[in-house]
Amino acid sequence: MGFPKRLLADHEKLVLDIRPHWIALAGPVLLTVVIVAGEILAFAYFPDDWPSWTRGAALGGGLLLFLAYAVRGFLAWVTSHFVVTSDRLIHRSGWLAKQSMEIPLERVNDVSFHQTVFERMVGAGDLVIESGGEYGQNFFRDIRRPEHVQKTIYEMSEENQNRMMRPPGEPEDESTLDQIERLAALKEKGTISEEEFETQKRRLLGRL
Image 1 (cartoon, rainbow, N blue to C red):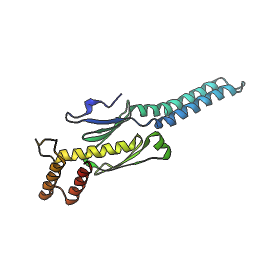
Image 2: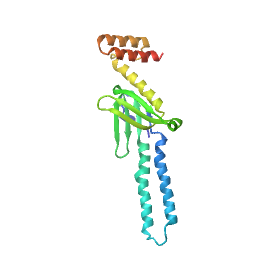
Image 3: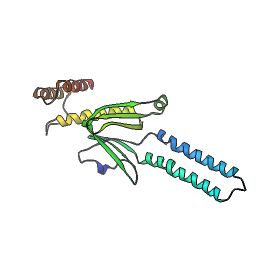
Image 4: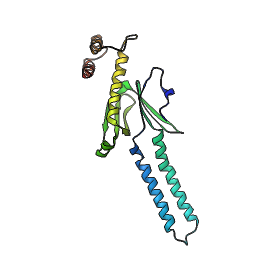
């Protein structure tokens, strides 16, 4: 099940909707194998003179571990969404008890990712998003194709910033030269700083 489109604003566009990488299921799957193996060994080697209730206790204990950790981990994977839209980043998880956090794209200051050698081989990694104000640093584990996600966030942040600076009614299909001239005008008015102008100019020229 994908991210509910009804949660998007009328003007908002869904760009990316991904679940955690399958590597996040390694723990629950390994635990399930251990529990099953433990139950088989326990029933195979239970002393005959032990009370019958001990077998039931062993079975109940294994089932409790399975529900509390393995099933919980699987449900967390199924219900978790990392979403990039034209306006914001959203992380949503949970089935009955839901958790959700949102970061406006204009608040994103930096996006970085970390991969071990194995994670690079399977296409997984951890994403770190630095944002201003109350959002601070946010850490997301087991992201699919983190380098692609990082690039997508930067592209959407740039488009969002350009859209916010564009005067109402102005068409979106501006040439690169038009956008640079508009940024220069904003710099002259004091709307943006010299540093912001140079940063946006380099981004625009880098797309040529």
